[in-house]
Length: 228
Image (cartoon, rainbow, N blue to C red):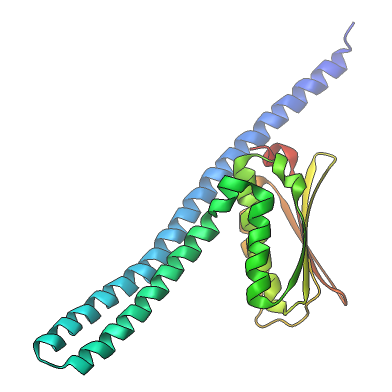
């Protein structure tokens, strides 16, 4: 005969799980809306304004050619090409940061390895990457975790480290991601608000540990959120 207390406890747990999932869904929707607003603002204030400026420069080139001022036309055209290349790079960076093709086509491990390689080449940092445990996560959770790691690395490289370690582990229904660096120099004041914004929709937590050896950013996610 089934224990009534056990049955009631299971019902309570199921109701709590359902409430947690509903709260997670609402947080994800809100986070997606905020992200769309940030992207729209970036595009308007960045590439769109830059392209408008390039159009004006090309108009100036046309007028200079009509007036026979070929040297002026070449100079302005060179400036326009330089700004055009900057816009292309900005849009490429935006595309890579939103969802790198490698994440979709080759998986989480390859995507984080590519991210580490980019930072390693540009910042001359040695990376230790062990994130295979994240391959079992849901698609949305992987995308969110990738962004969390990306933001953490952006902050870590500001400390001028020589080595950064990235690990993901799963234990007791909790997914733990750690980003540890041995740097100490802070080029500008940074905080964990940007990371917390990305962790909040997944009901996660962020902890920062600083010591003589460096800094560790530790992000924990409940498995029910990481399965999304």
